[in-house]
Image (tube, rainbow, N blue to C red):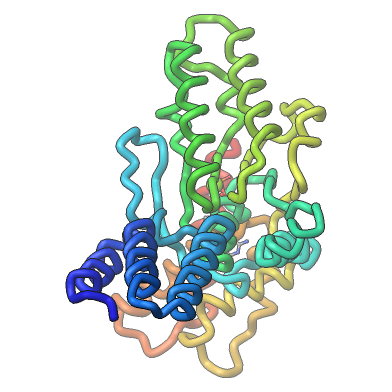
Length: 326
Ligand SMILES: Nc1ncnc2c1ncn2[C@@H]1O[C@H](COP(=O)(O)OP(=O)(O)OP(=O)(O)O)[C@@H](O)[C@H]1O
Ligand SMILES: [Mg+2]
């Protein structure tokens, strides 16, 4: 039998989420059992430890990630719970995202056959179409931590420093499996701090792309941009998939409103009418209009949301857009 000290050490390492310590105490227990003549039990314990080590190296080390302290300030960590049902996109976009999730879930099987799952994505499209939201949905579906890279902290005046910071991020990508989100990553190509050296900016973007290309970790890298047209086409081949986000179709607009408002409207509510008047708004603006209507209902004590409340909220959103387009 394991000694009371060993049992306490096992409990303590479990509480501390210290997997390494937990397994090394388990090995001590196995050695103790072997010495006491319980060879079969010792062997079984050792096998279990090996199995645990293997699965923690190829699977999601979420427990490790949860304990991570990012002292460098380069990453923001969160644990989103969003799912595919929250994301309203065309079926072709959804199919491609689901494919990545499936391949990630079968990582070990694919690797055993010499194949690597999809893991490098470029999302491109207009503001408010759900690129950042998608990174959260992928994290929620895979139950991975989401690490948002703070590019403002990466980009410094000094070229060497920026590259070293990028290197640091890619080291973490290798060590801790998760979703790593580089929002507006094209900003790397515009080296703001530097006086006028366009060449330097270009080199930072290039070294970033090279790091992406060389990365063979188990993490998922998601980059997003609003300006795909300014990107060099040659960089597309660094990604396993390049997905274009569009403004929502009529059906998608209806779905967005329904997702948000179904419990606040009367049964015979005309969703169709809403989708027609919201044409041209982004998913984010539609979500905001829906939220505005909910707030109005709550603040003025209405029983439900009417079409005219929504019409007003949609008009308000549209006038904000027009104001900034002029
Ligand atoms: N496709 C979508 N499905 C459901 N909700 C969405 C979608 N797109 C946007 N939203 C809602 O709008 C909010 C803002 O969207 P998000 O930040 O993902 O847009 P974005 O494409 O990243 O925009 P930007 O290019 O400005 O960064 C989301 O948090 C979500 O509530
Ligand atoms: Mg975004």
